[in-house]
Every structure is written in C-alpha cells, then in structure tokens.
Image (cartoon, rainbow over all chains, first blue to last red; front, side, top):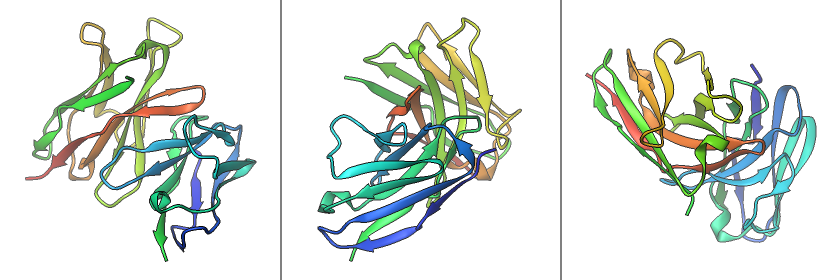
Length: 107
Length: 120
C-alpha cells in the first residue's frame, strides 16, 4: 500500500499570507494525486488534479506542484473563505490513500 | 446538474447489516469508477471500496483491507445506483459515508454523505 504523509497537520495563517502543504508518498507515483478542500459539514471539493492541474472554477491562488514522492499545494494571498481542511489523495493504485489532512486556521 | 445522492445510513447494532445506495444524476456513471469513502467522527478520510464500470460488463471491484469480506459493492442498473452492502458491522465502521465518482483525473464529484452509526 502507498502510505501518505501530509504535513503540517495544522497551520495558522493570516489573510493575505502564502501557505504550503506537503504530501509525501511511500513510493513514487505518477501524477495520480489530487488536492481537496473540505469545510465542516460539507463534501470535499477538488482543487487540483494530476498533481498540478487547476480544477475549473477554482481560483488561481491555488496551485499544485511536485512529482515522484513529494507533492505540494500552495495557496497565495489567503482569503477568508480558504480557512478549511485540506487533504491529498493518491488514486494511482489500490488501495487509494488519503493524507491525514491539514487544518488551516485564521491567526 | 451533476449530483450524487447517498441514502441508507442509520443506527445498527454491532454484527448487523446495512445497505447504502448512491444515486447518480447528470452524467453517465458507467463511464467512470464509483467509490465509497468514509470519515469517522473527528478523523480523516478513508477509501473503502470502488467499482470500475468503464472497461467491462463485468466490473472490477476493490476493497480496503478493513472491510474486505464484510462489504460488497455493486451496481443496480435498474435504479442507476451504486450500492454498498455492509455486513458484520463493527463499532469502528461508524462514520459518514461518501459516494464519489472517479476517472483518470481522480475524484471529481462527491455526494453529501450518509451517516452510519454502529452501537449497541
């Protein structure tokens, strides 16, 4: 199984800040990795697919990068609506696995 | 509108059974794989099962080790639903269960979830 290590588990930032969240995989994967945002009581929403492709309708302040075993989600110019939980998901091989999640809170 | 709607959750005793359904609308669900993902209270997400309808009339099915042998995923073509039959339920199966559709580019649409509580 591919293990996902997501860091940090929580993050405190201010509106206008730039933040970075990282997912490391236990073995190299292709770009079969996505980033998702989840708000309390809501279903996850895809932000990034294929490691770096921006989902249609998602603001360009969100970006994804990385390859191999290390992938990054970057959010620039944080907006109030961005404070949520973020997680990565690898769908390259079964069992699909999620990162543990990063809770982004307002400082 | 593209939509997934889960149903069938509820309270069940340990050892009991429950059947979840996921109704798809607004897209041809047999051109994607369909998944069940769960989230225990206060915990992260766990992929549970998938059924891949894209390549064969005899779909491939996959399960997490934690549910293998207890859960069965299937398609009800008459109702256009993906079902998850859950047997021998355990307290640790308590979670919000999401249905999600996936393709080459990952999980692109999710339902709102249905809650399963296993408790005596």
